[in-house]
Length: 139
Image (tube, rainbow, N blue to C red; front, side, top):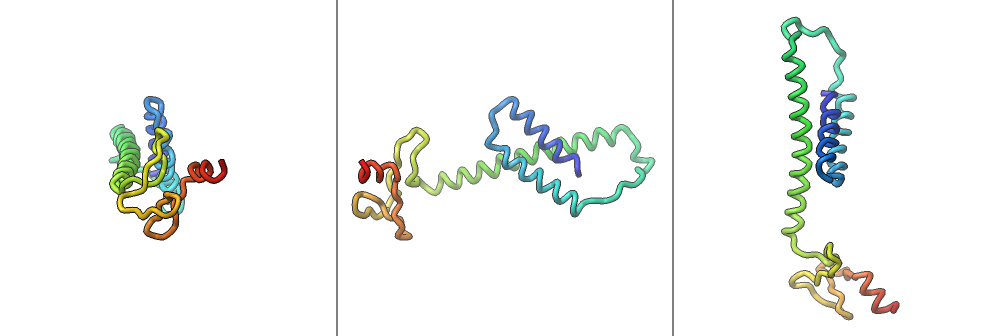
């Protein structure tokens, strides 16, 4: 339905006014653009006269509530997928990247340490901390 993307963006903006969810924007706008693209190319049907039995104020209420529900479910879907990805990445274990507080993590459990204390992953490519490398060799 062509009004669904409009409702999705309106609900996202309304949620954004209450909480800082800018990080979610890409994952909300992506399905919106996909829906608009499919609506234009695949779902397009020329408008025809509405049946007399459907000419009621309940049709307006039904369409409004249905598109609002689609908007909420799209945002909930985006949040759920991001949560699942985050949980999966946390279950993978620590990586050799700095924490948010700036402290360095050590090598993963069972990692082989090469010369100069630089750990070598199983693929054989050394994972070098650029800041530590510059401090050690460039002064």
